[in-house]
Image (cartoon, helix red, strand yellow):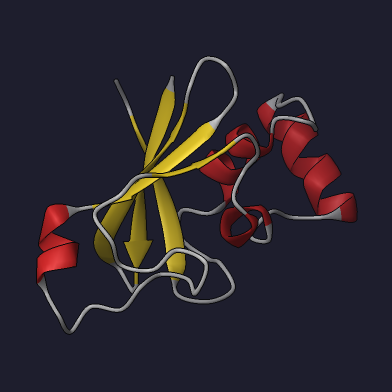
Amino acid sequence: MRAATIYYKSEAAGVLRQLDNGSFHFRYLDVWLEDKKKPAISLTMPKVKKEFKSPHLFPLFFHLLPEGANKQAVCKFKKIDPSDHFGILLNTARFDTIGAITIEQINT
């Protein structure tokens, strides 16, 4: 299992996990849910206590991935399989992304 903290405008909002079977789970942090001023990170992931589950990387996170030559360069430099979308995400979405979402790997 791999996991990452999801940040919205530099504040921890939730945790994204990839299970050993390849599926993905996302859950908001309780602190984020309790603060009525904090928004949902996506329209497809409203602020609710339930855990969101998907057999594939959620579109919100998939669209943060580099494409083309940038993806090839990251995969070559970091020695990541081009089909390992979560691995690429963990290596590229920590600081500079399009939008308010950044991602930091949780080392277990």
